[in-house]
Image 1 (cartoon, rainbow, N blue to C red):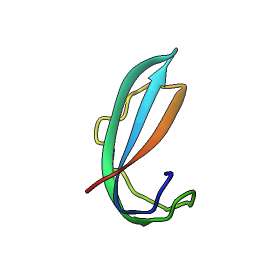
Image 2: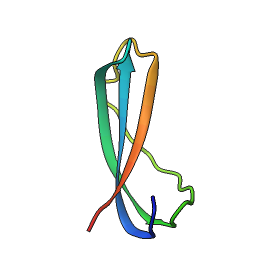
Image 3: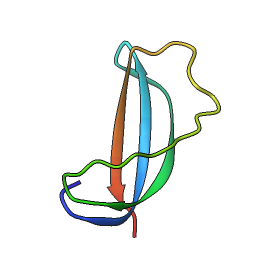
Image 4: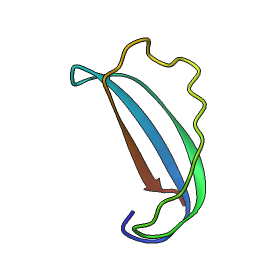
Length: 61
């Protein structure tokens, strides 16, 4: 993130051959700009096959 965030929406998106095949989201608190923060996401419908994933965090007001 480019600025400190009191709360953030964190998403994990799974891909297979460049196509999105699933994902989920969670929230995390107290993320410093440019910092790292552990988070948990319980993905109940994890895709059976994926070869890549990306994590996104957005400031949540």
